[in-house]
Amino acid sequence: MPLEQTYQIERQKWDTLATGKSEESLRLAPDDNFEKYVQRASTMVGIGEFLGDLQGRHVLEMGCGLGEVSALLARSGASVTTFDLSENSVLVAGRRAQVNNVAGSIKLVAAAGEHLPFADNTFDIVFGKAILHHLDPDIAWYHPYRVLKSGGKAAFVEPVGMNPFLRFARNHIPYPYKNPRGADRPLNYDQIHQWGRPYSQFWYREIQLFSMLERGLGFSRRLAFLRRLDDFLLPRLAFLRRYCRYVVMYMVK
Ligand SMILES: C[S@@+](CC[C@H](N)C(=O)[O-])C[C@H]1O[C@@H](n2cnc3c(N)ncnc32)[C@H](O)[C@@H]1O
Image (cartoon, rainbow, N blue to C red; front, side, top):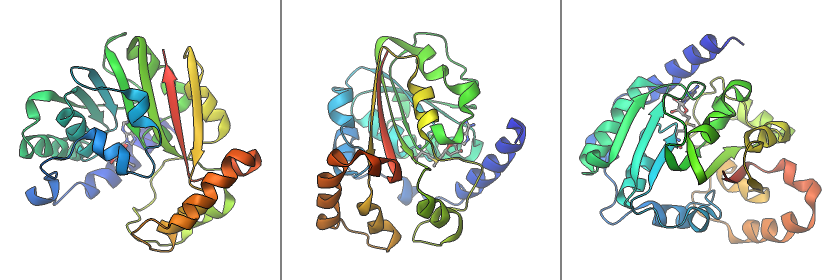
């Protein structure tokens, strides 16, 4: 599909989802920050330990959406730059920054991840949650690396698309809090390796196999036995990992 067409589909979807957000819905809990968020979020495996102290760090968040993570990063002392293709999302992210008194620490831009409008070697950290799988990797793969400083770290949490049952569910089965499908393509191993190729160090970890059922079955709480099953099986049975729901990627320039 031509890039302009994917942009059109994605803009329309995310601009629509960004409308009608109340000030109250954008307010963070008073003492919340990025460190607390990555400890409680089941997909953020190892991110806090990997990125370390954010105080005074220049962080690029790729694909800010409605700006929650950017605001949390700012709460943790980072100087944040962020962008999104959806102008409505960028506007909401700006409102969220104001509502939470962190607007002075967040620079927002409407831009596409295939053409990052930032100079080489600018950021200490690049972070993205569910953004790479919206981008064309053949065009965008080098940009996060390019804008990172030497020795800088990048981390991404992305959906994986190699499980046929999960693919069917994503395309056809309604489940709680599901967004309509856009033009995104959850990653396969070739793409995961393509994103990691330029870095001096790159490793990744597939997460959520049985525990993906928590969401699919509508449970809003953690089901400890499913997580224990994942923790037991995934390190031992490598062939299962491709069927996981997410991958967490860690890179060092
Ligand atoms: C799944 S949302 C994730 C948003 C945010 N990171 C979060 O976790 O809440 C994907 C975001 O990617 C943005 N997006 C889609 N295609 C893009 C592109 N080519 N360049 C930049 N952003 C894009 C969408 O507008 C949307 O905000």
